[in-house]
Amino acid sequence: MLQLLLSLVVLSCLGAGLAFLLEVADSYLGFYGDCEININKGEKDLKVQGGETLLSTLMEQGIFVPSACGGRGSCGYCKVRVLEGGGPLLPTETPWLEPDEVRDHVRISCQIKVRGDMDIEIPPELFLIREFRSQVESIRNLTDEIKELRLLLTNSDSITFKAGQYIQFQVPEYEECPESVYRAYSIASPAYEPDAINLIATKVPGGLATTYIHEVLKEGDEVIFNGPYGDFYLRDSDREIFFVATGSGLAPIMSILYQMAEEKNPRKATLVFGERHKKDLFYVEEIEAFKQRVPHLEVILTLSRPEEDDVWKGERGRVTNVLEKIIKNGDNKEAYLCGHPAMVESCVELLVKKGVPEALIFFDKFG
Ligand SMILES: Cc1cc2nc3c(=O)[nH]c(=O)nc-3n(C[C@H](O)[C@H](O)[C@H](O)COP(=O)(O)OP(=O)(O)OC[C@H]3O[C@@H](n4cnc5c(N)ncnc54)[C@H](O)[C@@H]3O)c2cc1C
Ligand code: FES
Image (cartoon, rainbow, N blue to C red; front, side, top):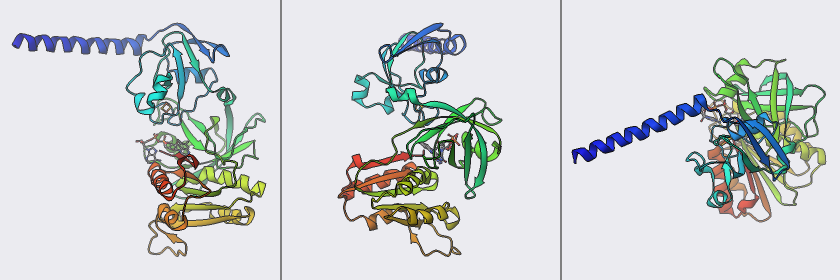
């Protein structure tokens, strides 16, 4: 018995040692030489150096796959079909893949490394995503926690996007951030202004990007970003629209409202914008102006925890309390939700209960 136990311990140690050596070899010696990545059956053939993740290898070649979490394996956005050369499915990929996606060779491109030749498939529209250089024209405090950045594209460049889409902001190396990372920010400005974009960023304690934006970035600095990405944009229909936002989740909805104002869009629409306290509200004047410019827009501002000295005649309670009150049934309605993941999830649950089809509920979770 003792002998069996000893053999098991020895075998486990050998296994662990081997795994460790392989990991060390991969990180330090990880030289996979020249590799070829064939995209969409020969539409593009890339000669690359192996050893990096598929996501960053493609990015170095100017092919930008959506990657809202910046390659940390926590968003599941960076899906790519890998027909050859992807290696075995990793435990870090499985939480993001449905069984039919696994069968269809879909992989999480920030988790797999280029270790040899690969055949992959990506949606052709990803070839249109570009990297942009810009200069910070202004930085404005919207609240104690939220800053607005206006980025002016340099070299007379211009960006084409659908109102509601987002970009990936490149955070350069700085004291708190030893290597450059990317984070997603929705465009808050109108799509008819192609030479500049506005972003709004809520400070996250210890957050790499938001600490950079709030404490390091200055007017005049260069910002590199790529995009546009995402399917959070207004669908063409005659259904009644419900926009719901908390915090910086208002950003893409501002862009959509600018578009509706420009087009004098006649659809019936309601914006429910929720914050905790009155001091957390922002863009209030701009929202008031939309009431004049978007023909059938109703606006409901709600505070979930108004302070005692807040003079407040608006709604009180969470955005879900407001939705519960104003939506009788889901007939001919669609919804656009943006903000904290927990808010989005509880709104989806409520809207589905009210009868709004899930396929007509669009959202971006800022988690
Ligand atoms: C499609 C999309 C669009 C987005 N648009 C915007 C936008 O317009 N404005 C905006 O401010 N953000 C937006 N975000 C969120 C943004 O991409 C970053 O996740 C966020 O700014 C935090 O980045 P960070 O590098 O500062 O924090 P990180 O370094 O990524 O995180 C530090 C820690 O904070 C936690 N954390 C991350 N985000 C939050 C949060 N929101 N609240 C509490 N804890 C958090 C992390 O889990 C981690 O533990 C968007 C996200 C997505 C997916
Ligand atoms: S980039 Fe977020 S999971 Fe890959």
